[in-house]
Amino acid sequence: MGTSPHHGMVIRLLLILLATMVLGQDDWVMASDKPRVIVTTDGEIDDECSMVRFLLYANEFDVEGIITSSSQYHWQGHKWAGDDWMRPYLNAYAEVYPNLVKHDSRYPTPAFLESRTLLGNVKAEGEMVEVTAGSQRIVEVLLDESDRRPVWIQAWGGTNTIARALKTIEQQHPERMAEVAKKIRFYFIWEQDETYQKYIRPHWGKYGIETIISDQFIALFYHWKKYIPAEQQAYLVGSWMKDNILKDHGPLCSLYKAHQKGDKGFSEGDFRSEGDSPAFLYSIPNGLRSDESPDWGGWGGRFVKVRENTWLDPVSEPGYEYPTGRWFTNSAWGRQRLKKEIPNDAELIAYLKPQWRWIGPIQNDFAARADWCVKAFHEANHHPSVKVDGELTRDVKPGEPVKLAATATDPDGDEVTLHWWQHTDADSATATVTITNTESPDRTSFDVPNEPGKQIHIILEVTDNGTPCLVSYQRIVCNIR
Image (tube, rainbow, N blue to C red; front, side):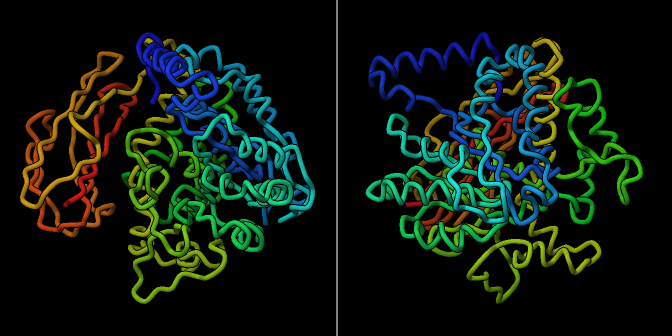
């Protein structure tokens, strides 16, 4: 989360300095708490919307690459945004960068992001023959031995540039494939070409790369008005978008491609689509710890293990069998269900809940960062900080009372409220526990159910009363022994 430049950054710099002295210069990067990410994108209009948001979250990641790729929908000569479609967004980021760093000095410089923005395999759907600047950047990151942290490789479009990179490694460094695979974490927005099934899975599947393939992203794509509850839609309608994002928030937000007047079924300013945003929302270190296991859930959805180390969307339909091949527009359960056009489809709404349940906090977070583009530090809102007493992962015994306590502060001096709740969807335990004093910082507890070998997840939400209100989280995972 964003921090005051007078507090958070001082602590981080001291930690890095200490790590450098203790571990040695070659290993200091291991002290960073920021996820490493590589974005591959086909430049569709919703990719462009997602890119505005992604750039406002660039402070939360170590951005290793932003690579234009192709997909089954977009390639050179077919609905193509252009090889340089990122240029206006990078230019606009450069304009707001001096103000962004007033709110968090971790924002990367425009020159740094420029150096990380490259062209990948774009000549045709699924093309992975050509070695490109984009594919070589992925190779470079994965072969670099100086940083052993995982790399979250996102496919907002097709996986072909990723596949080309992995094929280069297989051809030139076959002895390092297992080592490289340990670094990789995949998050795909559908399988938007055949290269995952035809190359990546057959050649790299044996290494057990954690692979999330999302269909839940459709909660944030073009048809959101058909299945998002009204409470969440309130954060996507034109009146909210204009006030919080589109108007008077600087050149980057002004590029955001919301709906225009006359668009069928939508009002001017309505949220259009950000189907690709869950790929990076999943990795934001907001305290939900979703990156530790795909079935825990967080801003990028929640998933179940279907085969090998592949995680897809939870389908509750009795007797349902997942496809053995691609999870995409022609096979994914949510997309197929949407085509049935069932009014107020309760099953589809429930299927997408792991994604849409977070829309309010996600949008308020976006709005705060839009403010950071134009406002001074004291004029904008920033995230509260929270620290739970004790370990975040605990061994507990049946019948044991578990005490919960935390301290929360706010860099702007705002009032904060605490709320503890059980994330039953993430639990392996079947019991619903009774949490006492759910709004208390230090008088909260629950009794452990008699389910040895199972897990209970308790979420702490800390919300400030700033404008827009912002939420920070902590997740306590209780392993019943």
